[in-house]
Amino acid sequence: MADLVTTPNIADADAFYADLIALHDGLTEEESAALNARLILVLANHVGDAQVLRQALDAARAAGRRDG
Image (cartoon, rainbow, N blue to C red):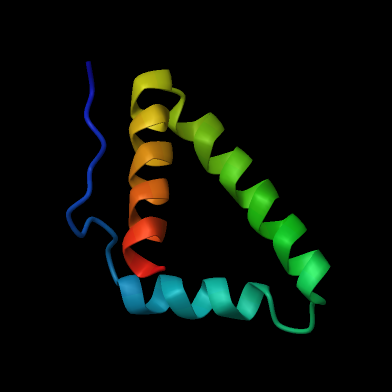
């Protein structure tokens, strides 16, 4: 079983974040939400491992509870 990587793992994370923000520039809130959903599905397909994806879902839910 593979495990979800939760430690920093993106080369030049600041540049990626800037690209992600720029991707949403000029979009409505609805268009931005739809773009996020498409991006999630593209990345989930790339990961492909159902166990890792379940870990990611669980981690995202847990992080949302801590933030709220």
